[in-house]
Length: 355
Image 1 (cartoon, rainbow, N blue to C red):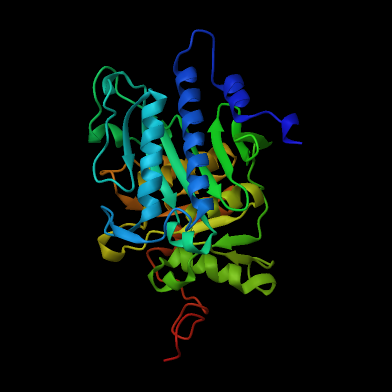
Image 2: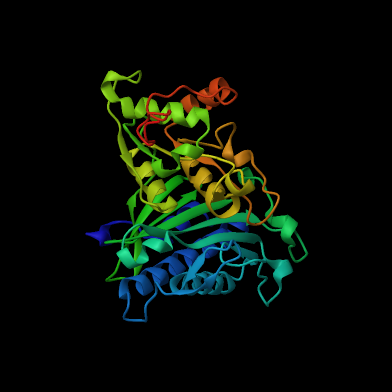
């Protein structure tokens, strides 16, 4: 029974709080409020159309993407949680163009918060494959933060976590003792520890990639995917399964629990170096993956070393098993200056029509 397991509050007490308070106590307060926000979002999502059609389009966000009602609702829930915590100096969100400062004493807040309130909101009407993702950084001392204060490298994060909404609501957070997974007990309204000290399995036979983008992939990614698809008779000597949820949080959750590798490489479309937002998606994902013993890369270097030039800057990301990520980085060195001659992705390839 869940009553025999530690709650999130008890784990936070053990791993964050110290006599006399300090940063650990403030972090525990913030994480507890963020978990509460995830619980509230889960409740709104679970109610579905009973609260109006949450999948209705209500506008466009700063990136020019369709914004659904649930995106706005989730964003408001997280902003309210940051305000209640009383330790946040400023918040940036995928749904907002500019940082939001709490109305009360922003200069006294210890932390900055970056949040993707509802990743995969296009899947809401299908009731599968969506979640929330957050990153916590230290705030500047004694003054209200500006945009530049949020543009830190991922290695400067203090904490990161996410929630996945589905049949059960999972909350996963990286703390001093590792990456811990919790499950929402709906009877008690509490998150209960169900997966302590998560470690990414070293062996993998799964990869996740959006094959519809094959024509945009750099040569290294073409080679890697080609070899996976070749299966046991190919150079890897074993069969791989391919997965794609259309939601970064769902992919991250699967990799943490089952192993594998996820690829959303830089491809240069629309003048961008990738599709994922560095602050809201790449940084927290890379932080969690590294804390769980995996690796996260831009393809040519460690993802946590990247400092964005703007709040909504995008990039490429590959994460999962250390050996697989290292292999792909090697392929980038070997092939990105010379087009890889792929039998599957060439002129008569699997994803192209014969000439």
